[in-house]
Length: 206
Image (cartoon, rainbow, N blue to C red; front, side, top):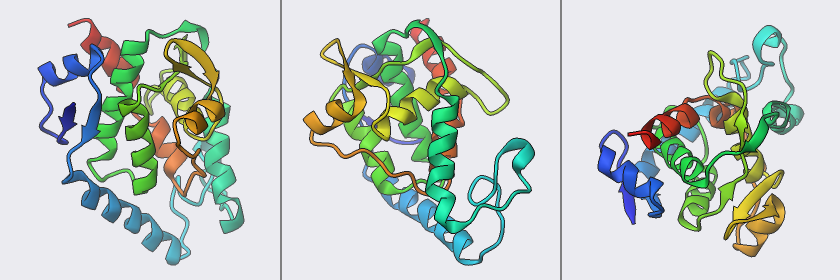
């Protein structure tokens, strides 16, 4: 088991994850994640527009989103960007990508809830690897399409490799005793933004 301590993970540990070792976050990460999620709730309580939490995205940044539509906003950004193409990326690369995303979320700057990070961690530990096409968008916000495919499986959409077999995500999670997420404010955006897919491919080449 590789224990990921944010900011203190070395190349050899990433190589172990790439080669199939399960990974989990260090216990010290969870209070930081909890405080980050509370910060989002404090913003919502002020009823002020904040990008990515209760506004639209990109050119729609000035559009205020009502509280009743916040979950749908996050779900929509995930599903609209899960539009990759080509053959599935190698499972070791995707496993490494997921571990890199874990370490990123554990920095406490993303505003995601503990249960969201716990699900991603459980998928890494149980070797539930999302089916992610090898080609997709790479933009100023990072590896949007690949990470959207990952996030989609966390809400029960798409496919997951289970022992090498492509399995509907909802079924794979259920078989593993896991419950698909209902995304909270900002969580879709937090899961999509990042360069973990590019970084995983770079690390795999070392």
